Figure 1 (tube, one colour):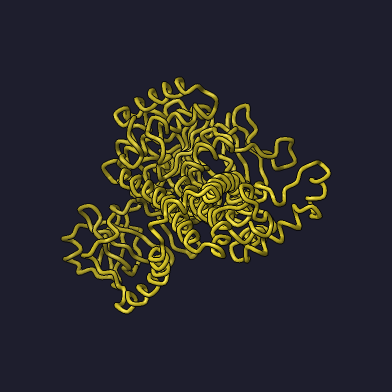
Figure 2: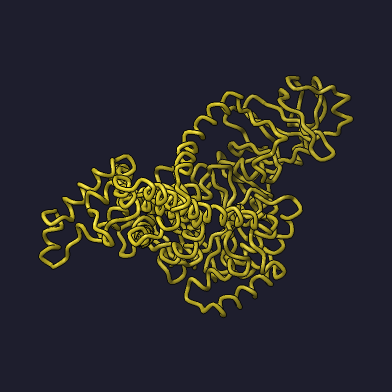
Length: 355
Length: 270
């Protein structure tokens, strides 16, 4: 492992341990206030945890568990931070902003500017070299900020929601740039966007309330989420309970019948989750006859447009489930919030896997 | 951005303008009264007399020196007060700002008991052969004492409103704290520093009470222009009025220059 981190900060209920292999990019996902930025702040040296240790390559970043290198200041860490706002220094033009890192670590003015030109070209921003930050659009400024972070030649690049402040036209371009420059680099990217995780990350960490609730390869997390947050990102309904013969049973006794991987032999009583897409749910008024094993009485809480479908959110009493139906079906059924209906899911469309 | 946008609602009640005009007049009227008293026939000889030129020269030199001293000492003070975190920070701020509300003559007495021959540090300095009280150095010290809070207050405000996110980014790019201060913090708060320095210079230029108490009134050594004006007032009212006008003109030139520069810089940024 070329980066290991373990730290706790009780004031923010933060307790995480993270490690990265060489050339690995990890996406950190989670709701607001989950501790994502706190994690980056600790790695960058801007925030001091109560306890823990972190090592980046040859460098010991901190060792608060009685070590001999208790705290390495931010400028000696090799962890450049890119925030939501580009935070380009307003008094320097784009070129000198990018040259800031090399210049600060002892490069001559000429060498620093040469490096800056190289990195500006790398993010397709050479044309803005002479412009002041106030003359750049949000997307241009953020690309210059990426070049500035890379020019500092960080061993670990920290990206704190780099796309969040950009408009929808600027984000795809920056995402392409990031995909190119992150290849072969160690990076941690905090994001809200599942697309960032898919495109940029090898691995995903899902955090909630200052703790890691789930981690694994991006594809697996998004196809088989185990946490409600990841399920929300993946657009899946998720219920958890214990594995039984036909599917899972929730703590309040509701049974969700489903399919699991035939190669997997669950232990009776093992904790598991059932995931199914909103499109797999059919909505009925009154009783249902026929084969479906999963039929739940629910109360509609919300109706909202979702693509060319209507998303119906409903409460089973224990869970909130989402169903996608056509506007025509919704009109035929006369659905309104507060109405009691039945949600029916074919067991074949419910995936059951261990929690 | 146009502050004087007459098209948008400004919400100021009419009577506020009336009271504001009284306030404005309170400042402008005495100045006008003084200008009306100027003996223009004798003006040039009066303001170019030997003693007047000496006093003006001394004022400009000492005010410049004390402004530089204010910058050298005030920038670290403002940084520590705005960004630092230590016990007694609020107390330190209150004490540093004290000269703002202290009568200058009290400041002069305090300085005398510090640097005077029998003073706290003065005794040791005297042994080392250094005598400060009643010297030009004393003038600079007195001016610095009263002017320092102006620089600290305006710079501290600028530092607070700038926040420290740029500094955090600069540090993660590999810049050591001194580099961050020189290349990021100071350029960012330069307008605040400049207006603080202008205020300090103006305050130093007008310093009277502390200077008289601590430095005395020796022609060519400690008699700055305000002291000269006060002295002339007893013997030659015309000279006092003429010199006052010179002081007003110098102060207005300094303030006008710095505001004019800032206005044009803002214009260029837009």
